[in-house]
Length: 120
Image (cartoon, rainbow, N blue to C red):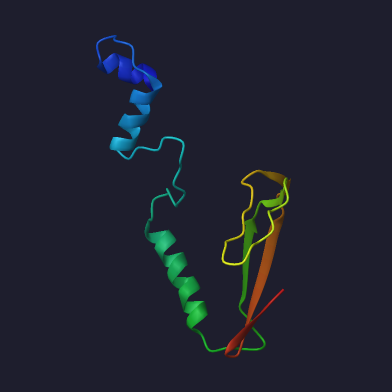
C-alpha cells in the first residue's frame, strides 16, 4: 500500500501516518473482507431457490417433515486477568486481553412442527 502511494507521489517517501490518514479519509479498509455470494444467479439457481421457497410454503405433513440444517463456527475465549470488583454506581472493568480456548463448530438441525419448531 505504501509503495502504491510512493508511486503516486513521484517517488517521495510516504510515512505510515500518511497511509493511515488516506485510508481513513477514503474509508478504505484493505484488511477487511465482505463475505457474500459471488457466483452468477442464472435461471437454474433462481429455479432451485424458488423450489426451496415452495417447500417452506407447503402445509405441514408429519409423513414428510421439513428439516433445516445450519452450521456456524464460533471462537471461545477466556479472560487472562480477573475483572476488577464492581463498586456501587460503577460499571464492571474487564481487561481486553483474552486467551483463545477453542473454535467449535455448531451444527443445528431444525424440524418444523405445527406452529413451532424443535432444534437438536
